[in-house]
Image 1 (cartoon, rainbow, N blue to C red):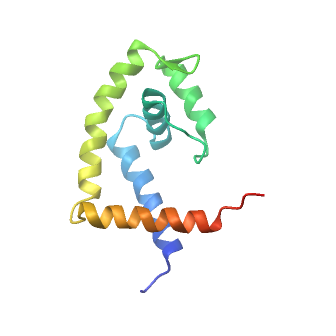
Image 2 (cartoon, rainbow, N blue to C red; image 1 turned 180 degrees about the vertical axis):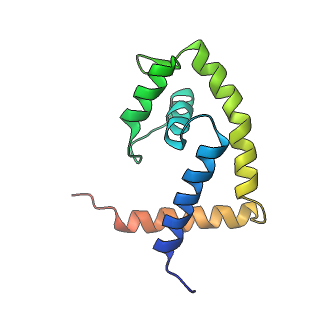
Length: 116
């Protein structure tokens, strides 16, 4: 290995952020919030959530933390762009390789998570 895992994690995160911002009409964080609200997912691991909520509210896509009709339409349109982006990012990576990588990262995170 030429570089440690931390390097590759940070490098990939930076590339994902930059590439996704270019592929979407919103930031990566705004997409994560929009998608999380749509699917009732947890956003605790992410920074910058409140700023994204504020921007989505200003766009008229959220009101009171819930999707508006415009927000649902935007989510539907953006979902196709995200699917294309994910296919590009996953090119040459098998489903088994992806799952193994996620499993390793999950276990590493669990090893470093303290409970008190």
